[in-house]
Image (cartoon, rainbow, N blue to C red):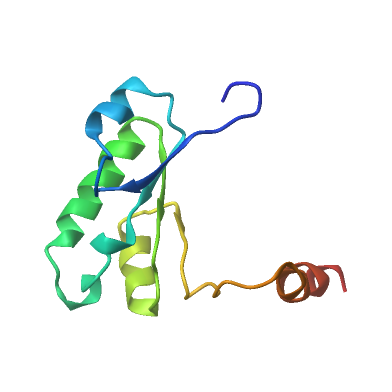
Length: 110
C-alpha cells in the first residue's frame, strides 16, 4: 500500500487479465471474474482454476474476492477454498444510496 492506495486486478481469469500483471504490478487484491463461478456447485472443473488462483494469490500475500456469488452453495465452496471475500446477489442486489444506508448503515446505528 502506497499513500493509502490499494490496487485490485478486476475480472481475473478472463480477457486481458494476465499472470504477468500479478508479477509486475503491486497488486493488493485479485477479483475472480463471475464467469468462472457458473456451474460451480454442479461439479464444474472451474473449481480447480479458482482454487489455483486463491492458492497462488495467498502465496504472494494478495487477497482474493470472487464476483457473481448468487447461491449459498457457491458461498460455501468458496469459504472452503479460503476465498477472502465474495461479491454478488447473495449479499445484495444493486441499490440506491438511500437503500444502502437503510439496509446496512442505519440498522447498525440504531
